[in-house]
Length: 459
Image (cartoon, rainbow, N blue to C red; front, side, top):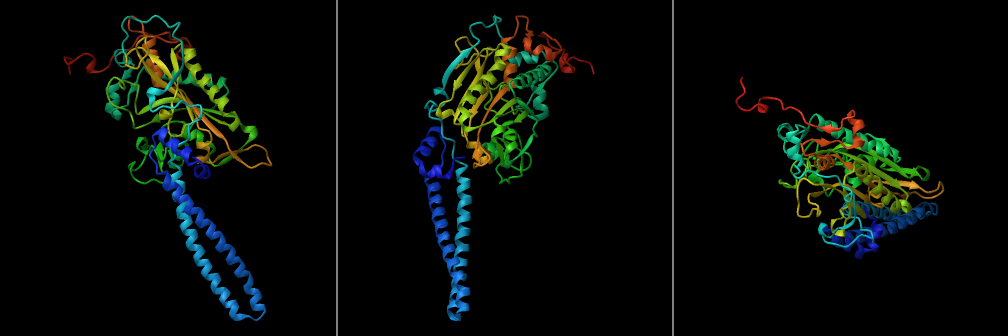
C-alpha cells in the first residue's frame, strides 16, 4: 500500500506505475477525495478550536452576571457541535473511501527494473546447468503420458473426485512428491529458516494484507458464499499460497530490531481457481487448482532488503542445483511485474518433454517454479507490520520478501522428463533417495480394476 502523502506529492510517479503495470485506477478521483478530506479536517480543526474558546467563556460570563451573553455562547457552542459532527461524519466517509481506493494502487517498480510492456520483454539474467546436462533419450515422453503409463499420476480419477484441474499422485509418484517437500524443507533449514505449519483457511484481512485482495478475489476459493458477493474481514478462503498466512503471522505487530531478519519457511497445499486454458501448455500437473509448495518469507530492515533479495534468489535456486536440473533466471519487466512487487525474478526449470515456441534452443520448455519478490514496505503497510530500530525511536514499516522454494508439481515434471531413461523408467536424483528409502529408480506400478484388463473382463 502506498502512503497517502506519497500519492499526494508524487502523482506523476503513481501514474507511471499504473501505466507500466497496466492497472486501471482513477487517480484523479483519489486525489480529489484526499483534497476534500484534508479540507474537512482543517475545517473541523477550526470549528473545534472555536468551540473550545466559546465554551471556555461560558463560566466566566455567568460569574460576571452576563446571563444573556452566556446563553448566546451556549447556543453557539451547540451550533458548533452540530456543525462539527456533520463535518466529522463526512470526513470519516471520505477517509474510508480513500483507504479503499489506496488499496487499488499498485506498488511502484524499483528504478532498476527494466521497462517493458509484457512478458516478452523480461530479461534473462543467466542460465545454469546446461553445459553438463545428462544424456537424454532420443524420444522424451511428456510427464502426463509417462505418469499414466507408470501408474504414478492419475488425472481421470482426480477429475472424477474433485473436477478438472485436480490429480492423484500414486505410489512412487506420491513418494516423489513427499520426498521433494522434505528435501526442500531440510535444505532451507540449513539456510537458517524456521519452520511454520500454517492454517489452510485465511481470512479476508490476511488476503488484503498481502495484496491478494481486492484485486484477485475471482481467483480464490471462498469457503462460504460466492466470490462476487461482499465479504467481511473474518470471511474465510483457502490459501492461494503460504505467503498469505506466514506474512500475516506478524500483522498489526511491532517487532524489535534484534528480531530481524526473520526467515520463515512453510509447506502447504495451495488452492487457485485460475488454471489457464486447456492444451499442451497446461496439460498434466503444470497448472492445477491444488498444488504443493514450500514458501520462504523474509522480514528485514529496509536497508537490508536489496541484499536479502539476492540471498533469497540464491536460496531458492539451490534446490535445482542440488537436484541437477538445468534452469534459468528471468528478471520481470515493469509490464509483467505484478501488483505488489517492486522487483521480481522468476526461476524457470527446463522440462524437455514438450517443445514450445518460447523454449530454449535445446528443445522443451521453461516452467516457472519460483517467483522471488521484494515488496519493500508495500505489504507491511497494508498489514501493519512494523519494527522499532531503537527503543526510544518511533516504529517504522519493515520490508517483506518471499519466494517459492519451490513449486513441487513443476519440479516433478522436470524430474520425470529430464531424468527419464530409454526404457521408460525414471532415475531418482541422488538428493531425494534418502527420503525414498534409498530407491534409485521409478519403474511404475500395475494398474488396478477392470479397466486394467480391458472390456472383456468377467463379472
